[in-house]
Amino acid sequence: MAVASESVPRHIAIVMDGNGRWASKRFLPRIAGHKQGVDVLKRTVRTCVLRGVQVLTVFAFSSENWKRPADEVAGLMEILVVALSRELNQLKQDGVHLQFIGSREGLSDRVQQSLLNAERETAENRTLTLNVCFNYGGRWDLVHAARTLAAAGAEITEASLSAELSTASTGDPDLVVRTGGEMRLSNFLLWQAAYSELYFCDVLWPDFDEGALDRAIQAYAGRERRFGMTSEQLPGAGNTAT
Ligand code: FPP
Image 1 (tube, rainbow, N blue to C red):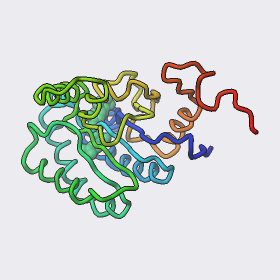
Image 2 (image 1 turned 90 degrees about the horizontal axis):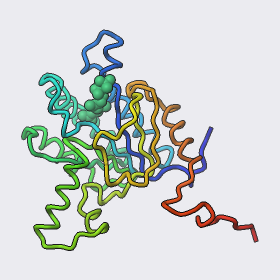
Image 3 (image 1 turned 180 degrees about the vertical axis):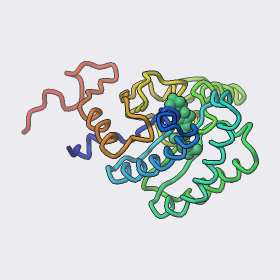
Image 4 (image 1 turned 45 degrees about the horizontal axis):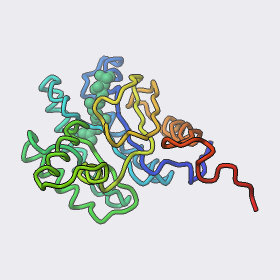
């Protein structure tokens, strides 16, 4: 069922969970699940453009994912570099602006170059911003922002801290989706998700298709966002057509 454009979230953030389980169920190495996950991400970007979503933020590699087996970590780095070189032209044509969010520390020169190149090549695009959280953690983001303010001797307020977070240019997510059946944030956008609508589904990320995304958007459209107010106080409440 189509959702009216004003009810489509401006900014969707996704924890793309379940790649490993998807692969294990097929007796494949975990990395096969991550590869399938890239294809699903590609299709999700396209669907978001079609639905009028302006920002998509995805959790691709967390600060904690370094603890995974070395071959899986190396595989994820390789998938990122290969996907960027393969998909960059299409992303440019589709008007996608890529931003990588997270610490560059610990990433090889090759990976860093590939991220910088993709950011530079898509910097002028305006149809959709794709924030790829890579070597990212919500706590890292907050500490980094607080340190920047402290070093500048700046006042720490909600506004000044928000402005130093890695997502400052794209704002807070309206909807946070987590696939794969777990119900936690896992250090994703801790500050930014303060008033986000949360949506959890059992679908494993490699199976997350257009219908699954539409169900999440549909669920969002049915929510009432009150930001601490009562229903009656919301703009438009009790208004009668005149
Ligand atoms: C969580 O699933 C997924 C990740 C840690 C990686 C997410 C990466 C992708 C979807 C590929 C896109 C990536 C890039 C580099 C653009 P899991 O492995 O924890 O799954 P499990 O819970 O079933 O084990």
